[in-house]
Image 1 (tube, rainbow, N blue to C red):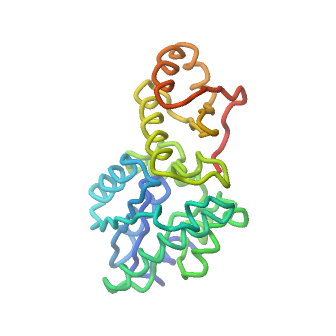
Image 2 (cartoon, one colour; image 1 turned 30 degrees about the vertical axis):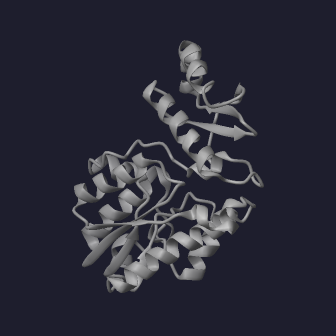
Length: 251
């Protein structure tokens, strides 16, 4: 099945929008080939503000209406207890909301940006999508991450080179309770590093301390920006560690 055929069979779709390049390309393709489409973004404490901003901008660019749904995941104990099933519970909660809003708006088909490069057998959230009947056309049509970025660049989608991003909860080790304070500190810290020119990195929370995981380019930059980084992060963390392994992929 190719993407045109998918949207011929599913001509009216609700698109789960994350603010990343995968869902951006999915929105672009839905606008191009579907008869009717609408985007939905769920804003929780796990998403930094820039994700919502990017979601709004890409929907404006491709001319698709967007509904932003506010939801507090911190009210759900099975999520904040942060077991290895956290992603399943979180995905189930978020996509249940999307499905309910979409069905109320008259859409029977909900789609997301899971692509052919994603290892769906290793992602707890994938089971939640299956249970809810959410379809993943990029994966079903064999479109991988390289092709997604190519489509995005060729069609001037400003997110084409945006690094892959995982929610703020992934910075906290399993079985460490997720709190609003840890999430906010993580967002502030990562925003600061972004402002200093770091582009593909994570700041992991370790019992009051921070572990920086940097890509090759960012590893070179830390030597130049070390004092400023340490000065800023010391306001929020007891100790600051640097992982000497170059960061390759996100969980």
